Image (tube, rainbow, N blue to C red):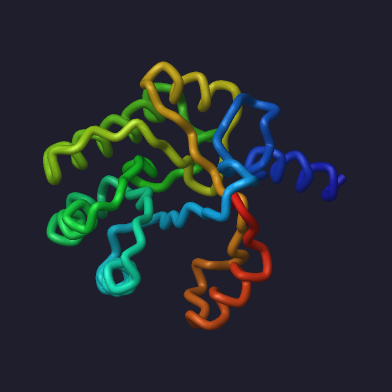
Length: 180
């Protein structure tokens, strides 16, 4: 029974799952390009260090930002935009959206959009649900708000434990492929 429940729970979080509706997971596999995305910021000093490396290497990325962090660290948010990077919505409080009532779900997204627009005068149409968790209702609400839902194709297990940079690089390079 526990395995069945775990399997059902993971279904909501599998980034490649298209069962609940279409999401973007990767780009064209016939091109030698990858999309770099970062979640849960802005979070100084980590975001600042990432921005320094991206600038040095002349690479652009997409940052899926949490609204309360945008409000707390507006200067870091401005650095993201000044560096030519894209931003996407990652909700206000980074809650598990499948568990929220619809009005709260909408508020989580709209508050973040408002914070982004107030801080950097940008309106995003990109959304990444926290934990990758989504179902029909969540995706329906996102579509009604005009979002393109962007997931990921290269997982970083236990990234919240802040593994060393070498560990992250090893995990990513072992899994990345054209279009990731």
